[in-house]
Image 1 (spheres, rainbow, N blue to C red):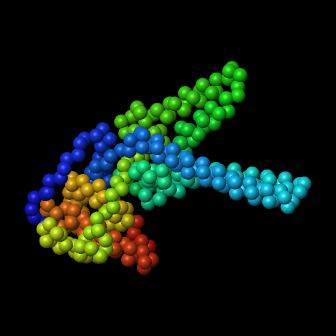
Image 2: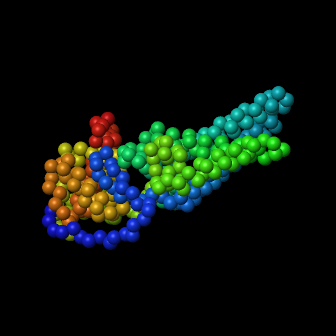
Length: 309
């Protein structure tokens, strides 16, 4: 590759700008989600959960009515108890499984986070693990649900019980916690080693389709042709593919230079300068095509540290 790097518009600095260091040692610029955006995402998720519980409750109530109608006496009572138990289990699963299911997915985001354009990421720069997601969501009970339950339960006291006051202070302490640390971390993020970042919604250009110029590996800027052997593509897996996709989506020149340099050092190539995006588009598209082909053949490579299965 030859030529000078094309100038990029400089975005204004923000106190939410951070640098994420990947296990490869690559510095990726990211933007932390704002507190208001995180609050909005939580409200959306709680609304979805509440609607799900209401709909599920109505369905179970109708089932209970049918059971009570067909079975009188003791049988009807047993049917009602069964429906009540099922309802409690469903509410418990909704409360915990909702966040775990979506945040452990490939997007690392609940529907509320996706709608507001944010996602969870590991502060270490590595893969988001089940332990991280579990820890941050179990802490939500201590931060939000438990003090709220105590507050509701204390509404009927005669004023001599300080449970409501303690619960209120408890709730405010954790609710305001993100205001007093520069990374806007709630207690769950601090314990789990995660943070919430902006997830760009821009779609990758048509050049990234498997039938486009990126698959052929040609650069419209320099005319260079990038074709990678199977051995050169085999050094990376799905996790690295997702990281590379994020770099291309965010389109930050300094990040693309760092990632191209890391890949070239791994492959033994001379990275050059001025054609970073074309190189990364070609590598991304060809790696994706290889991984998709492998999955069709029953093979899967999670990351560079694991073999195919």
